[in-house]
Image (cartoon, rainbow, N blue to C red; front, side, top):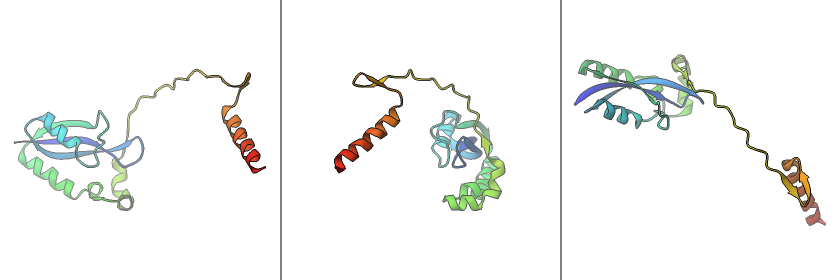
Length: 139
C-alpha cells in the first residue's frame, strides 16, 4: 500500500464556495486514491474538478495529516448549527469557486393565441382566466 495526500473541494459552505481539505488516503495508485477521496463525506461529488491534487507521501506525513483531520473543526461538524458555531475557525479557509460566466441564450418567443387574438403577457392572461373561471363557478 502507498500513502497519498489528496486535496479535495469540500462543500456545505455556501453556493459557489468550497474549502480545500487535504485527506490522508491509502491506495495502490494515485487514481485510486483520488477515486476514494471523491467518495468521502463533504467532498463535492458532482464536480468534475473536485480533486485538486494528489501527491504521494511517506507514512509520517500520512499519519500527521490523519491526526490533523481528526481535530479539524470543519470535519467534526455534524449539523448546520455546529458549523455556524465553528464559523470563526473555518471562514478564512473558504474559497470562491472559479466558474466561467455562461451566456444565457434567449429562447425564441413562442406566440400564444386565444382564438385569433395574440396573447402578449401569458402569465397575466392565465391569472385573469383563472380569476374569471373562479367568478363563473361562484355564480
